[in-house]
Length: 475
Image (cartoon, rainbow, N blue to C red; front, side, top):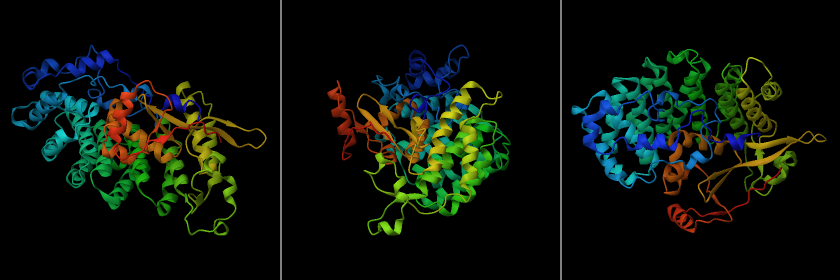
């Protein structure tokens, strides 16, 4: 996919290390927070942190959520006192009787920063229930948009860190009510994100996931009207993206595929690129899911001769076999995707046009041949009219390389990056179970100047074995 490598995790808003460090150092003790919350509150003269400007969490496009470097851009990494600071912050959060809206905002922002930048499971293990209750109270009462959205963000980070199977049943009613009844569209979009994370990492089970997928699909189908957020692109984009995140978890989507793709096709006509791309990615995922690996007891005669279309670079892996038609009119869908892959409307900005082109070339490639996942540097052989390109490889830290050759990996990676941002690398290498269970084993670069980092990474991975690095795939 053109520019896909550059766009992996590229956000529309950045913050310098110095500004981020200032935000990280603003809270150094429990006493300072309680006494100086007003003075420490947001100053309009400086760049806001991503915890402060929580209303801008939605991305311009589904693929634009931070640069490759930002995967390891962790300004709090050298904070040697973070465990004590976290302990003080937690105590402040739970001491609600003495708190104000401003002080709770300050506490939640600090909590988000610390759990994002450090894997703190052992430090919060015994306080999960209490913290969950505090965050839910802020969501329920919605004293301010900033407090509510920070509480939702904190709950996301809590659930991905604690990986506790009882969280979902406790928070689902409150989050659903917030999505439906909040007067702020910013809160609605943040609550959709939070509900998705709690569904996946909080013990919902497959039935709960399917229920939330139906809920999110209704939001998308109604352009947000079902939750009183008519034509709010942030809410619709969030619902579409989180539908895809949940859909990755479901093995068989044959019964859902037809109706879902029809809704996503309607959203391809949206005026917002983020909505179009999120819908397109879900379509690619559903086509990908209509093919599964060949079973051991299946004969070649039972499969048919369509295996000849398997890309040569994929033939070393499991053979992928078509199980059902993802959509009844693939030709109509391909025409719509082709128009987006080549759109030239003057009403679209140059940036959005480039994003639409690069994304929909890859999405169209998968719909044409569901054995092909996300690609970059995609080209077309003029004689055979077949797409060629390299698989996407994401570099994380000095040691890590991850081959993103399937849409489910791409969607999960983007979801984790939305939650963990610059702390992704720390959580991965320090053994966050939610992260490790979500993504494939990271491969190791063949050369490295930091042997110490390699040993630490290997230790953190525990039983997860490094694979041999080979990212020169060409189809």
